[in-house]
Image 1: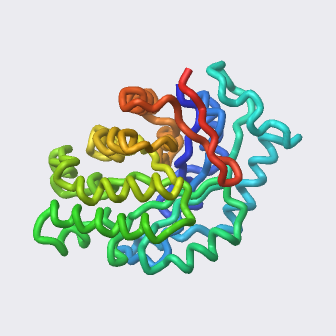
Image 2 (image 1 turned 90 degrees about the vertical axis):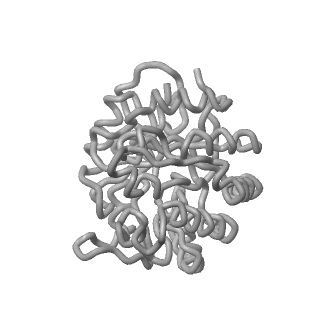
Length: 292
């Protein structure tokens, strides 16, 4: 069983629906030993009117995160002590302080200064937007002649970010836009083949591995029309074939009911792909937890 959720949003994120304390209670009830909050910081991205800015108030977020961390762990000795066993656990939950950066090539300097200014335990680097437009919105897809052209442009931008940035620990949901492709939203299916984009994706994965970074398996894809994780199983398998080892597991929950959602499916995928366990980060340092 997977006991750590390393991709969680609360009302400190523009699209979060649940309070941080309630997310912790949900984690406790689902036998999650460690929860890492990863609020959105998407600098210089344009959104449709009424969608918000997706830039977290980091000072307020950090204050609340640390308040709840201290409530769960008042003596400061709980972290890492007996947290990763398979025993039922309804006691304290280890609370970690993370962030999800929306990577774009032109915001590198901003993020380097930003990340160095806060004591994050964990940083996800995610490509949400291309040319400042988030791929979750129709405006992105309408600017290309086909969905496959749009996806290729996205992966090309992702490669540029993977090469340029060093501030992230893992790259988030590598095929993020497939959740929002018009065909996927309409039918629940996107005609994805690794071989069609393998020339780019191989370079993305090799770059991540060479830099000593990792990727995540994000279970929101099961809930976001794809009925599979992000990234696609073929990407996870190729990452492992190329020597990739560091992988975190995240629900991408924005409400309490999604904390640790479909982690049983994620574990099966990881085991089948050859992974022996998954990783957690504390103070930006990775530590592997072997499957039971």
